[in-house]
Image (tube, rainbow, N blue to C red):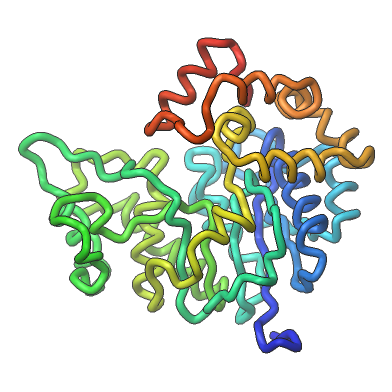
Length: 334
């Protein structure tokens, strides 16, 4: 893999593209990348699940207008076969889709519902020390009365794969507090080889799904399986927390908005301005308007109505409270 003149590595980017919302989000991601990171010289690969026995319908993007816009943004749509997950666990696309990336070349994966807002090439990635998003809540595990605690549950997973549990802990956090344990949001992650990373991710995720330790008997894997396996993969590959500076990814350079009502409710004015900038050109607008929630939120100003419901400097602590308020006002679109 070639390096830039300043010594930093080039890298490839993978997102997932499929029918419906995710296809339009992929097109918006590509447009934002080209608008705000014009110096990016790697490949932008849109991994597209193909029809097969694990999909009852056709999961491909399908819309010719989206394919055309992605091509205009120099994005490569490459299909992959769903061998393990498919419709039963669509989050598995980010695991199985890594197979389409070139082996041995550094990569960054982003969820398609991400907006690039500044130059990605300014981020000093250390691809030899993989990491993932720390913008997360304590969603897993859910501790049951009289059941095993955080340490027992997480240690059972590290033991299952022959990993050192103690070295994964953040000892600045209290025992049995969720942030003591290595846990990421899977909205972005990176590594030095997608094949190595992806093979291990697939192995761990399938083993947890098919043969979980007994300490997990009360735990649900829907939709958390990828986020349970991911810290184990990162730890096994010599990575961990914060191997890139804080405040860039999920900060000044990217925004994982997840759903458009949440974007307008809680993201910064700078993100709103970046979205407007990217979505305004006619060739982009005419495609994004095909998807009704984007049309209403971005182009028919329902997003502004959502934004007016909240003080962005004093948001509710829990996301569910934000969702509930938007739903009460009949502004929840996805």
